[in-house]
Image: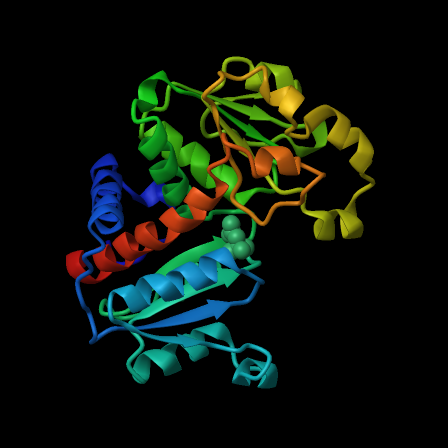
Length: 298
Ligand code: CP
């Protein structure tokens, strides 16, 4: 693969290879060196997990890393992202990690670049967050390897979630047994790629092996929608009581950042079933696998 843009562009074999390399890095802590490569982080939306883990992944692979500070970059003078990327590529940057509010922007940027330069989608609008989906899959496989037997529930704002979108494609590709998308009516997706949709939390959690909570995007709600947070919490929050409906060994996941006491309670997020910090740790190894795959197979 020359760019890493969406799960829809991956084959099961490519996903299997990325998982195998990520687990190898995690278990062996033996990392190859690619000092001839330089990675640039271009984050037009805020991030903690994704930006830092791509930086750590690149440094583990002995790459150089530059973080573009957009508030002081020449984009404040009107330079467009395509020119920024071409300029940095001319200076020797070979990997661009891009997060942007516009759906499809990383794909647009990738067109017109020569094949020695690689674009990685670190989250575009409501479209895709493919590296998050892969690190989530790694975490699930680590805990519950038999994907075909699993019931997975994703709970929250499915309609606007790029994570839920990418997970649907990935779970379909990897033949997950059952996916339930739990969401109030106004957040149910217009298009479903895989799984079935319900407004009933109990339908999703009953007998579930994996529960994935999604963040309530308060900043978006404040601008655009009438939304009763207390009502949402009463019906959809992941609490100890609610999770009793799932299997006793169910794992609790969340891509982060979490809103404690809104979509998930602290006792659950910090409890023995939570693998939220495992997701964060696995993110570094999976992103190493993605970077390596781009520069060794293209
Ligand atoms: N999950 C995720 O994308 O987190 P960040 O916004 O902190 O990168």
